[in-house]
Length: 429
Image 1: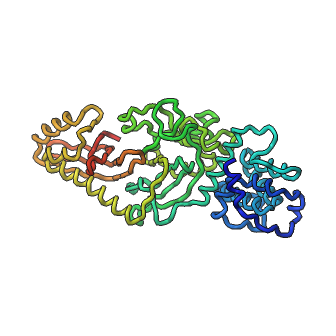
Image 2: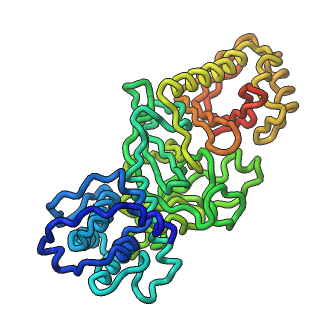
Image 3: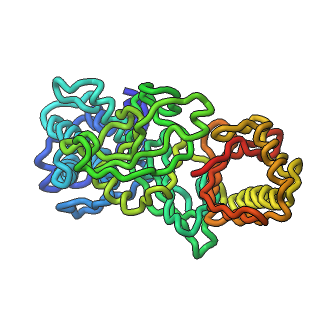
């Protein structure tokens, strides 16, 4: 296996005096221990504190990553009795956790014979073992590599005050991050928690119905489906997303039914790539994340790999975008149609108009106006994580003029063209 050669490069710590629990497991060969540790330990070595001598009866509700890190740390130190006790403690909390059951099987087998590979039990399906090994790797890497406190995801430019949280998914790391809208500190995103997730069987960048991929883009939770209305596959509940969004449709992307949801009742966690395109959490993690989800408000931004900004760069970029949006608003109030239309891409399209049709309508409307006032409230600005340099802007629009007053919730897609931000789609949200 790939991790086998890597693990051989690690020096073996000198074994301490055996405890009673260690004496219950026979000493294993260097090769056997190397095979047990394998790639997951290589990732975890430098990011995990040494295990304490006290063994807990239960483990934290925050997830199994910390306990898995301790288990592999004990295996590295040839403390197989302790590793087994920790594994059994994890299984007491999650009896149907397949990865922990696999580790337990290896530890029990190591008592009587050398182990040549991770998942060495006779008859263990190679594809299932590979899935569990992949889960161990991404879980331990996520545990070791938390976001830095002074960096934020580039996508979360601005959230309105009533939008309390945002969700960012990193498909490369199989990780979901929850950020709070820290209104007291100018609305900066503040890291709250992160969770292991499953994505599509064939990865990310969904294009068509049935391609078993997870979409990349800016989405919003549209509803809450309780488990009573769902099959067991979806676990404790589901939160549908608005895929395909307007930009997806413009790109010819198809498909439906992309949800955040849980796991079946007989399954603690699914492998990193196991869904038909949905983002899947364990039921306990879904229950925790659900407390922060606001239907119609909470953004779910799915990225191949998260871009991070320092707070200084984040402030600078946000201010520039807000100035661009306000310039559009002011030019609308000016009733100068040519000036106003400079904010729109020639490829602009609304629900029923292209650029020329939209411009002609605006010119006709402006001819009958003596004055226009436009106010934008509850502004949200999110960068799209796809290949295109694009932002998704949503706001409550209060339009007033000498002969018409109108209020609506509007969404725009701004695309960067030749160094300038231009609106390529506009419609109700």
